[in-house]
Length: 178
Image (cartoon, rainbow, N blue to C red):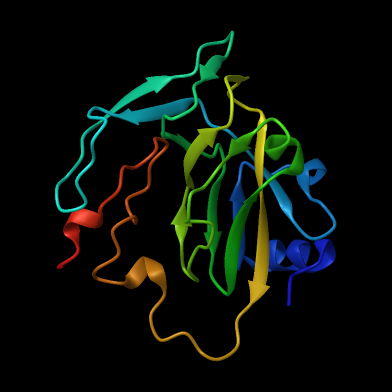
């Protein structure tokens, strides 16, 4: 079950959903719009290795915007810091973003109960497109959880993305044992 706008407002009031900054005008019928932060990153090397720490270069989106190029993975970040203590958050692209040929995540659209951070975006595009810091980039949808949670994400010892940040975070796959 997806939370409605009224239920999202109740959960914000109860403190089980936190969105900073929050603006009521970005609340949809059953979602909350999030915006592109000013920080982007790209991997230093074109060939990535899942067993190694792949370095990234951070940069800021200038006032005049930045043109994304096809065949490049950009790591972006939401302006909004979120906490979700009792629901499963999903981040999906907005239809307006998709109609510009922009994908905001490769596979990581689902958060975990207890996720507390900004969202790193795995941005790619179908053709060159200019983007801007602060533009609407996605929407958060909240699902009800069935059953009790044993360990919230923020308390997991092996959680790799718990450090609060305003910059995108590279893959930490290399921390897994395989």
